[in-house]
Image 1: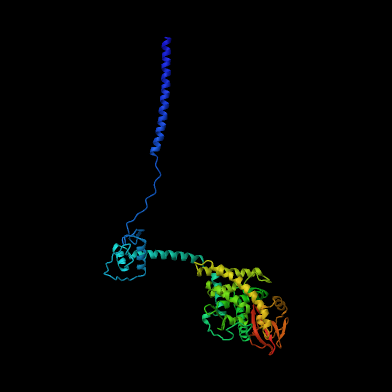
Image 2 (image 1 turned 60 degrees about the vertical axis):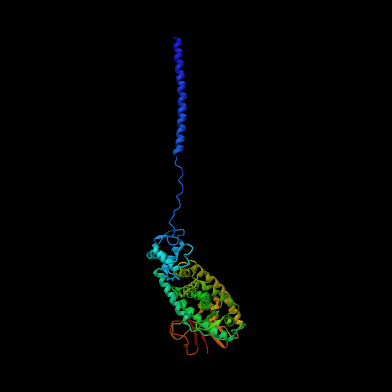
Length: 460
């Protein structure tokens, strides 16, 4: 019995050991089988799609780039057909109108090539539709730009006023009847007195026109009298140089003044510009690429005038407020006029720096001219160039009279050339250019600043 129990126990132990071995083997085999199955059925990375192929060009059998105007065509035949249709080209065959067209011979006969384009099914209407789509896209882009740079009603009114003021105080080159003079045109000399007399006369008239322009700049006459004078004195030469440079004719290297007098570079040098001449002509040449119209020239002149950084201003912040809409108007107008050239506005503003540099040298030139000319400097030119401190002192010392035909003159008196010149202020009372005050002195110049007038009285 004991032997039987031992055999039974041994058989059971042997059975369990065999089972465990078999189970382990089966499990490892199944796991290896499953991993091999996973490897077997795993999806490989998809290959890139084959390149799209087209039938050869129906016209010349060259390699096609796609379907164009209704048929499979190469880039060459596509472009040839489009140009021929858009330009309504008429070709002629020099043979029997039956030329063979392939990629070698396609350029030999344009007539037969175009006929084959039509024969294989290319459509004129497709060309027109394609052109209309492109045109529509361009117009949409253009309209977007135009809408982006749209002047408000307020800015539009400012632009209109500035443009009218500029046009009425500075006629365009095409409105002038040009005339020339042969005086000292061949070579440069220190000073041609004949040209100087003519130039100084024109300069005086131009200064009066600049003053008239300034009075019409929106808000300018609302400034204090002292600030109006300060701004005019500081910007007058800037505006004069800008104006004369817009009348530059590059192919003849001449400039035209407001009465039509046209002078060469040498003549302008001899008329009094002297060493300043070449710098002015260089600036005029730099203005040409900007292609400014009269509106832009007027706005730039107004910006030069209304600058809050001028010295000795009583209310610089008020001046800056006047300048802001002018800057905005010039920016919008220039970008609207040249949508593809956004840098034209900053380039135009940079010219103000150049103008100030030239004006500073111009003021120095006036000092040297005083020693070169035999007589005195024309008073209005000297007034614009002299020290502002003296002008303001005399301005505050003047007394106003409410009488229509009398003025009380005090302050600065200048003696020279056998005459006494007094700068006077008087109320608006109907006194004009060439009128007589008390029947004796002759009014030679008249400038209006707000509600008062400033005149030069010369006793005769």
